[in-house]
Length: 413
Image (cartoon, rainbow, N blue to C red; front, side, top):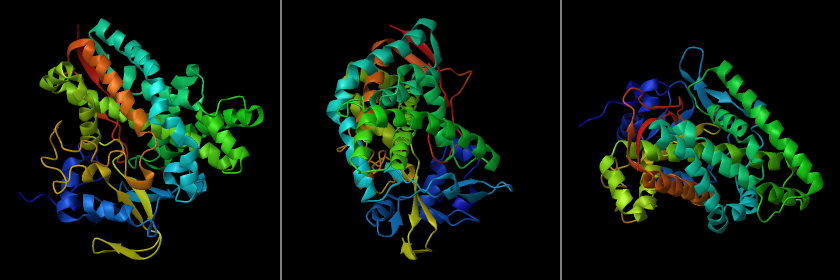
């Protein structure tokens, strides 16, 4: 069946935000490198072309200097982020060699060994979050668990106090909203205000630690970053950028994973039963969630100079958006790409955490959190389902695939 052309879709519409997959399928079929009308932003949607773009860092930079937004006429336009300080490119948006330096500073603190040490604490938090849902026969999964747990875990690893977690949740979600693409300029200003508050908060802790050096750089990311500053590896501006990126991206992406995992299970009682009987299959399920409901739908690249991709001419300083969420459903790469399949030969073969040198540094933490939360939820329930009186909805964003709310009905053990 021939799909409608991408031009027939409104990229910023609520319909495409809530269900982007018909649009992605149209992109793959008709325009794998698709120019968003009235902009110099192109969406790259197939596995092979994204793979090629990732292999060409000399042509495509990770720097984040502009994002889509809704113009005053309602159409997409590019918002130049440079005046907002986006020239400080930290970790996820940095290019090598700077990116490699940033990554080396934080990766040991997010290693499988360190994450495993944190698991008992995360398991306790998960039980605390689930207990009211089982006692009350349901509730909002996003409010109870999906949003707070990931931010709480990342804050712990960084070295921020647990009592600040509720404010950190609000700040971290606000930062992602700047990239949503669906808001107008005045809405971006509000989200920018939240991001400024987060920067002030993080800068305060950074300043104190730079002076006191009281933290343990073997267990706290903040202390490890400060050690890097004192060693001359990075300056304080980059230190601040790395910390803000970790609390924002680390919180929001895992919130997406934890929310999407439970939404998919709530729609499949048979799959709940399977995972209760065989909990060793939970990791494979989590990988399928990352593939099917990719947390970050795409990431931007800056075209360094005039070049081409997929036969399309790309002017220098134009932008690409590598659509991970589309490539993860590419039928040329996956059999039955729209289906949950726990028996795929290589479960981790997907772009849910990116790929290559910019593969998500927090992937071990995100996986552990999702495994633990699902284990605890399945163990403590006979069945959970979506409340038909309040269907779930995703936040309005072309960037993040994160639930705004997920009201559950829960039958406890």
